[in-house]
Image 1: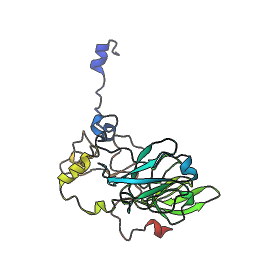
Image 2 (image 1 turned 180 degrees about the vertical axis):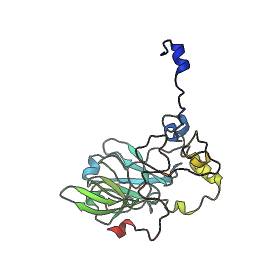
Image 3 (image 1 turned 90 degrees about the vertical axis):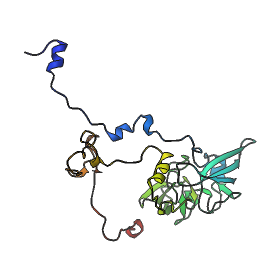
Image 4 (image 1 turned 30 degrees about the vertical axis):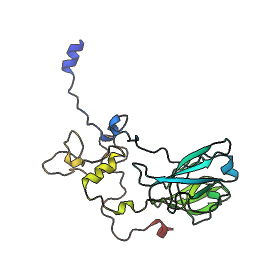
Length: 274
């Protein structure tokens, strides 16, 4: 007979399986994994796009070059005269190699092609090294912003009004030619050449960023916590590759891998492939 009362249903229901806690889902809305922003100096962006930059140029002076906690690249504090009101505007922009305090920086279509200046890509010749490039017009900087990063202007398509870039990853990207970019390489390059050497340095490095260190391997966990957990020796016990469309609790390891294993032979760079 089928159970009718709620009490009967409760005691005769089939046993249900407990789910795993999913690491990526814990990083959703939770105060534990929030970025540590208290000591940050502020958003680092290009100037807001205005008439003065679209048709002429503005001159700013670098007041100081400062460290922004949690960011590898130094930040330049640049002061501009406001073109519309009697006041001065202070902008935080990414410092490029070669910047110094007291240096003049020019932003706009008619600015010169000099390190640190901000120009639209349409007036930048092919082969120029740029950084802090906008993805869309007026978004104030999106690509090549990390320390030591730069992108290269490959070509301009004047009919379509687009520019092709080689990004720091080696990939290519086509953007509108009227997006802005800083000329030069982001300062702070070679930061990762020096090894951290001890756990204390890694601790302090990530303490100002966010809670993402130390990372525990899946095989070191229990089966309840990770698909690779458990067993008498630490082993995965299943293929380490996993499809892109697996459910979030199972989607661990090498996700949607085209290839696995050690990279052997000479690595072809994006330049070699052109």
